[in-house]
Amino acid sequence: MKKRPLLTLKQLLLMVILLLAFTFLTLFLFSYQKDEKRFTNITSRLFTEEMISNTLNMHYTIAFPSDFGICEYDPVLPGYCADASRQGQISLENTLASLKSLNRNKLEASDAWLHRLLVRYLENSLTLSSFSYYNEPLSPSSGMQSQLPILLAEYTFRSKRDVEDYLSLLEQTDQYFASLLLYEQEKADAGLLMPAASLKSVREQCDTVISASSLQSGTHFLQTTFRERLESLTDANLITPEEAQKYINTNDRLLKTVLLPAYTALGDGLLILEDESVPLTGLAAFPRGKEYYESLLISETGSYRSVSQIQELLTTYFTREFETLRALLSEHPEIAQKYSNDESVDFPYENAAQMLTDLKGRMTGNFPAVPGDNCSVSIKAVSQSLSDYCAPAFYLTTPLDDTTWNVIYINEPKTPKGLELYTTLAHEGYPGHLYQNTYHNRTDLSRGERPVKELLWYGGYLEGWALYVEFMSYDYASAMLQETNRGQDALWVQTEKHNRSLQLCLYSLLDIMIHYENASYSQVAKVLEKFGIDDSSSVRAIYTYIVQEPCNYLKYYLGYLEILSLRERARSLWGDDYSDYRFHCFYLDNGPADFLSLNELLTEVSP
View 1 (cartoon, rainbow, N blue to C red):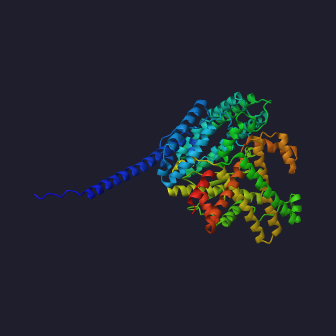
View 2: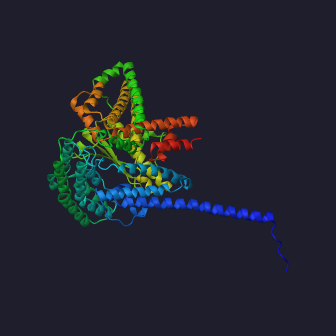
View 3: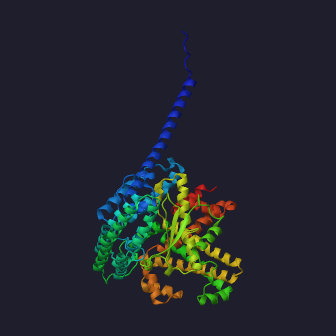
């Protein structure tokens, strides 16, 4: 038998090197797969837990839960509970620790980006959770007493299960409002109660939003919209007419025996809490108020600038806008005369649908197209019973997996026609919220992005964009008027644009004065007087609103300024390769996100 020759030392060393390389590669790949798998498990669990814990949020986030692995759940309208709040904080700490234990460099690029966003988002959420009773769920301007009825009225019925979930949530509204009242009682014990005037405003809303007379006549919007939504199911043969009538009877019963008494009990409970000695002040007047405001700023705006840096940025832009407006009026005294007489211009369009069509046409070429682009939009009027407590207009975001039907609400008493309606529709519709939402949802679905991304919320990213394109729509309007040889009117539109920017910038500065520097009403009144706002009722309304809605103006205007700053950075980094289209793609494709992360990413992806 012929003997096999022995391996040489060189061959043996080569085999050892290859074996070690194979082992290293195997361990390297396993390590990557391990972190990816853990990230998948963490984010999947986080998303599922968030969805099944709040059915109302789930319904507005995803249309078909089973497509996301959520097949079994009980309808839940979660209320406040001190123990549950503490458990939520512990859960948040554990999730954050799990995410931080991962090596972001071992994740796929899209997951690494999501990991960066999630860690920052949860870190700030955890910080905010330590400030018990500083949040105000019953704010007179945007509280759940006025928001919940709208969310119920627009609760889409796609299936029989949706109707039954809706009725189950409606049946829990008494427990929900009782929990909010408990929260307000605990706020009072902690010395953080709303002033009596604010509580009175909320009570008045409780009396107005729903009444026995409207329910008895069957004309309340929660009755009429319910019947309208059932019609689509009967037309599609998803429920029988008999089932529809049964659901209508149940809805009427629950509105009369659960929701109406819930509002009554909430109003009565708040009446008992009213304390005339509680002053109307900003957050800075409370213990740890300034610290809370700093975290709230990050949460609401997505900006990580310090308060002093924000003030400096706002002051710079205020000066710039003021000088631009002064120069414009100085160069065109005829516009100054028109402006001083508070005159408006005849706008080419009166119909909202025509305005949206015009906006879609003018944005073409500067913004990426919405995949599919078969979106429909309905313009609805805010119910008369809610008009006093709602914004001039708002867009209800559609679920991730169903962006075909969209609704923009117009609060007609607060939204004049003409230019203001046009710019409002740009803010809420195209290229604003509706466009941004549908583009984001369809793009993320097509890319297979993790649904946990839908839990991220950055007010500055969203509202900053809406204001950014709203200001752009003033330029669209100017161009439209120039096209019909109405140059003077086009200039007037530009004065309106700079005046609105100036006003929002001023209110943003006042927000910091009130909530961080503890400015009093009289101090704010003196500032407003310098800019011609000296009517006592107007001054009181401005001061009260800013006190009740900390960071709200900053959410819009600072978000807008952060976008402008990001755009200028993109111009600098991209040079001749810059275009508005490319910048808009970058912004939309990587959101929602905070501005610190967006700036980091812009540097990383730029040559």
